[in-house]
Image 1: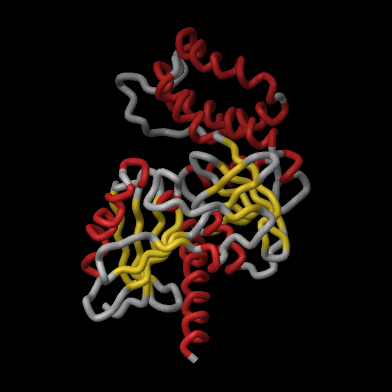
Image 2 (image 1 turned 90 degrees about the horizontal axis):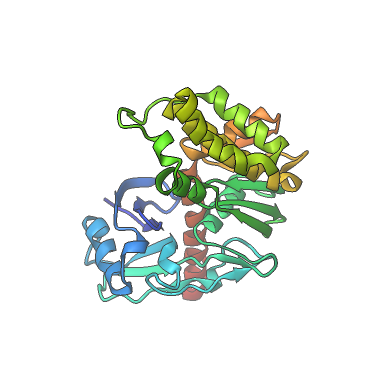
Length: 311
């Protein structure tokens, strides 16, 4: 395999790597459960090697460009945030991680920070760069669903501002650690099934009256006890209430505007459904391709600088 570089997305719970050609085309891919949250700094290099060693050769030093939690303070090495407004990616701010294997050169992409209101991101900045790579000159709002959903404003190739909503984490906490878990996960429930109508209606209800969401949450438990509400229905309603409350809080950002959504399956698909139910014009981009487009931008810039230096 004649790869030119390796792209890495190192999340809290998963490690994903792609062997890439110069233009970002994927030659091979691999992933593991060795997420950054479970690793000490000295464990990052062995975890990466376990995944990508078949792609390495002693004949050259392969560049690895990594985004995500490898650059967190508790990660491989601290990659200080770039403060907005700024371009989502900057070659000058890349941090080189310490390695012992001579076949590797690891460069970590820094996240972004915002002073007021205080906010940070790691990993999503690469997807924002991917949005700009796919749509040069894009001006508008980008929604990046996840455990912590980000809404970012892009103008003239820069990230102007962003806000984070902990909607995904709240869903996990409520569904796994609160009294609602008894209504969302019955003993005989397989976890399958989804009621799209219930989800959309709950989203609309939360958008119209976000102040009522906190009472409606306990109503999920009461509906199960008194009326035998199915767990699948309860899960759809909980998702709708939480995402609807987020959309209500972010109304000033998206109202009357076109939205670009990164992702189209899983959690992003719910945001897509919720936004379209409000007649919001939204386009969805593939998450993996957007991440790779952002990392490819970094490799292209590094290669151009290297060629300029050798002239």
